[in-house]
Image (cartoon, rainbow, N blue to C red; front, side, top):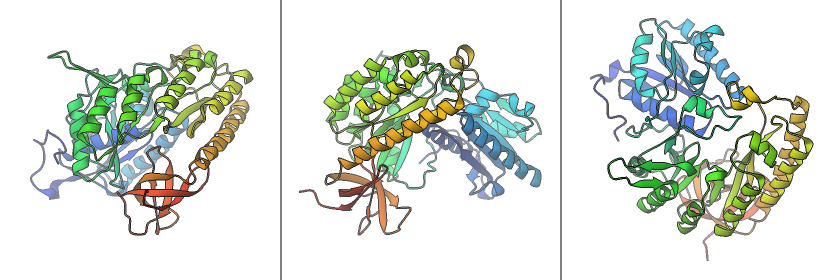
Length: 460
């Protein structure tokens, strides 16, 4: 597999190769970006180091979605700067969303890194590293309206070799008032569908059994062919991938409720290799709060989309994101979120208390006026309810047989395998003669709110 089309600077001898260590924080998109970074730098003479102590260049790929994520990244950057003090010549760089958002604030806060590179500047990393090697701080935080890294084959760094990611687009046009993504990743750009299928095909050739198509809002994917005017939307793209790669399971993340079309739902229902799971971020069950969040839909519209999912894909599972304690959220707004959770019956959820992010619309225009103790109490109530909903969801699966893609050994026992159903539910079952990468029919015999347990069984 070719890791990068540009290899003109690759050294002749493997003894000349320098060592690179990349540490990734945040979302699946950042994981995918780190794989692009490794591909770019491997093409110019780097190989991966197992740990920072053996690296010539240390890069921290950062996330700005929440304050805690930034704090964790800053702590690690400081530790890596300690490695730089111990070993002369080590280069430490910050890449990704924090690099884009904070820029010159790193040095103002006493964090003297050698490289600051935003998400659209990864092709420039070889020259940035060269510049940093002269003792100068190297910076590139320019955002692009064209960059998609479509021609770069990522170097896969996942551990299981079973499932991986393909980024189909970059950036976001939605400007939700709480979110930094449009400010750190720029405007929306969709990849050529041919390049998406090529990359997914490379995964098949490498033995992978599942791919997740990634975007900040995959539902708004739209590629235009400048030569003949052809347009490809997300429903058309995922159908092409399903047809081209019939032996590959296909997932996607993340959907936006305002752009989830019946066309896409019907496409998902038609193909057995498109997984029957949709992550549909809610954020709040109150139309008033949703408007303040600039989400582009109301409570009623969201529930209408949930109803469409249930009708068109009855076996589909639904997961979501929920924010507790957003600006001006009243107890009535909070109760509206709880009631919508009950009505939608989410299978699982990612739940957070609101954390104001500098530079966002909410930070500029809204007061973060919900007391911290109220945020925590509301978040705990949301978590408690979701635990019950998740338990009830798993309970309905007992006695059913699901096709499970085995991903590896269970953490608790080397004699058990763990994998996921098409609905993205985790199942643990005795390995017997099965191995990682196998599709196994599993009868569900037990459950918790988080996990299903079962035994391999032939479908009758």
